[in-house]
Length: 108
Image 1: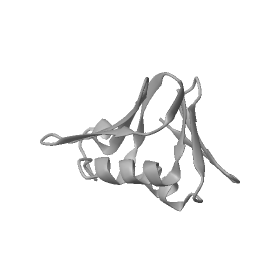
Image 2: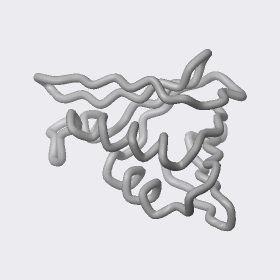
Image 3: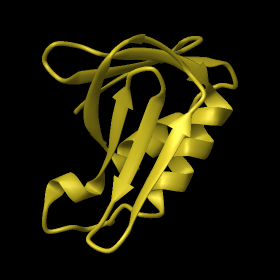
Image 4: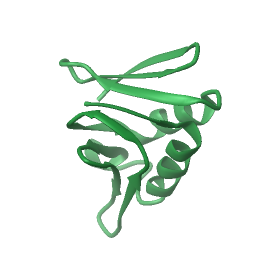
């Protein structure tokens, strides 16, 4: 999965879907944000009672999907410089986040 979007659009999307993510869940998957890149880039946050889906304005380069930890991903995205953000998922479920001179790798 690969896509490019603006930092502010990504922050808005993550902030919105995080409202449905459980901070401390019995199932680790419920602490994550599901990201799917296809024709559009979709972010989904779920808990037992609530689910929020956000369609992100982004340029999808390669299709795919992954779940990333909501807290870690949100903290990284909020601290990025105001520029284009490039997100790429490698074969071993490592998510790379690149923006100007910033580079992060997190497990998906």
